[in-house]
Length: 392
Figure 1 (cartoon, rainbow, N blue to C red):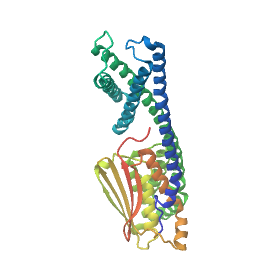
Figure 2 (cartoon, one colour):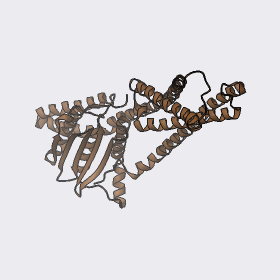
Figure 3 (cartoon, rainbow, N blue to C red):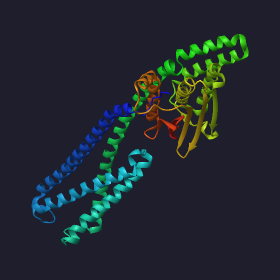
Figure 4 (cartoon, helix red, strand yellow):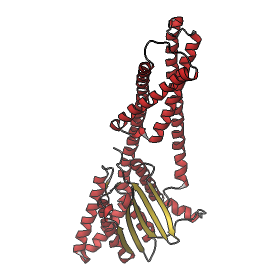
C-alpha cells in the first residue's frame, strides 16, 4: 500500500523558507528594540545634559558641570539597564499575551517597584557610597518621593510604548494568519468538492444505487439520503472554521455506509468514541479525509478487506483522534513501482498536508497530524487538536 506522510521530507523542506523568514523578522525586531532603547534613553540623557549646561554652576549643589553630567549619565544608564531587565521579565511571564484589564495593574505595580529600586540605588550611591552632603532645604523623604513618582511616570510611558508596539505587531500577525486561514479554507472547500467527495466517488455511489433500486428499494432510498447529507455537509461546513466532532462523525458514518454498499463485508467499522469528545471542535472534513485515506489504501487494495477503527479521546488540554486501517507505509528505499504508486497517491497526500496546515493555522503549533505504522500491518493516522478557541 502506498500512502504519503503529511510530515514528509518534502513538507519539511517547504517549511524552511517560512522558518528563515520568521528568524529574519525576529532579528529585525531585536535590532529595532536596541535602536529604540539606545535612541530613547540617549535622547533623555541629552535633555538632562542640556538642562545641566543651562544651569551650569548655578545649580543648588554647586558641583562642577562634569560631575553633574556624570551623575546624570549614571542615572540614565541605570534606567536603561532596569528597563532591559524589565523586558526580560515581561517576556518570561508572558505579559504580552494578556489583555489590557489584566495587564494595566501589573504595569502600574511594576513601574512603581522598579522606580523605587531606581531611586533607592541613585540616592544610596550618591549619599551612601559617595557620602555627599544633602544640598537642598527640602527633606530627603520628600525629594525621594518626587523622584519615585517621576520615575514611575517615565517607566509607565516606557511600558506603554513597548506594549503598544507588541499589540500592533500581534494585530498584524493575526491579520496575516487570518488571511492565510481564509485562503486555506477556500482551498479546503475546493478539495471537499474535488477530492473529499470527488466525482469518482459520486459515480461509484450512483452505480451502487442503480443496482440497489431493484434489489433493495428501501436501502436505495436510505443511500440517496446519505449521499445528500454528505454533499450538503460538504457545502455548508466549508463556511465554518470548526464544527462539533459529533457532526463530523455523523457525516463520516454516512460516507462509510455508502462505501459499504460497494465493499459489503470487506469493510468493517469499529468506533471507540469517548462521550465527552462529541461536543469538542474540529476542522470540518478532517475526519472525512483520514477515513477516506483508510478506505482507499486499507480496504480497496486488499481482496480480504479489513477493519477501520475510529478512536477519539479527550486528554488534558487536547483532543486526540485516530483512524486505523490494515496496510503498511512505504519504505524509505522505495523502488520505481513504489514511486509510481506514491505519485498516484499524490492527491491524497496533498489533502493530508493541507489538513495539517489548517490545523496549525486554527490551533497553533501544538496541533499535529501524523501518519505512522503501529505494526507491520497496521497504519494509524493521528490528529492532535488543542482544546482552545480557534483564531477569530
